[in-house]
Length: 209
Image 1 (cartoon, helix red, strand yellow):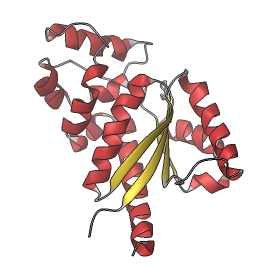
Image 2 (cartoon, rainbow, N blue to C red; image 1 turned 135 degrees about the horizontal axis):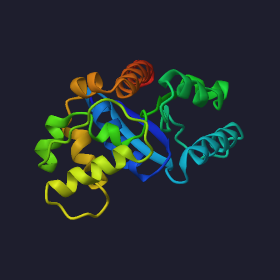
Image 3 (cartoon, one colour; image 1 turned 90 degrees about the horizontal axis):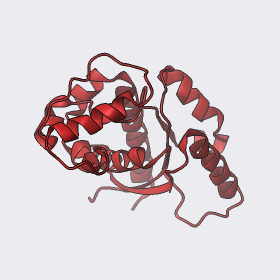
């Protein structure tokens, strides 16, 4: 029996979220015996834009104005900005209609998504060639973005996209268990995603011939 295909729609703050989350979603889905087709619905304009686009998308879906197939899961990704994961997840859930609540998975990197890039220093070192000293969480704006960019420069790579050019390799190579232990917001996302994938997989296998 081939792996069931699930359609996953993604709303994210920006390109740094998109290029890490797309391969990460695909990888976790493979690990769960699912083929994920990730459709990026919004990945520009920051936190407010991601949530507003998610609201508009739901209105269109409720009017049957969205082309098929309907999503099996919807992932909304906004930075935690040093609030708790539970609080950011609740903010996203409050933007969801009843129709989409059971399909919703929240990704809330805390404080910023670049910390997830650095979540597993061992695999980061193997890919980039430099081991960053991540240390305890810091809320300074731009801290992890700068740390990621400096790590790439220290490894001798040209300064192009500040490190996000390695996103797919990082997503496919990081030890997810170790990264989750290092970052509780990443662990919370992965736990929720795995649960959602398993639930939707069971539903899909129940209806597929």
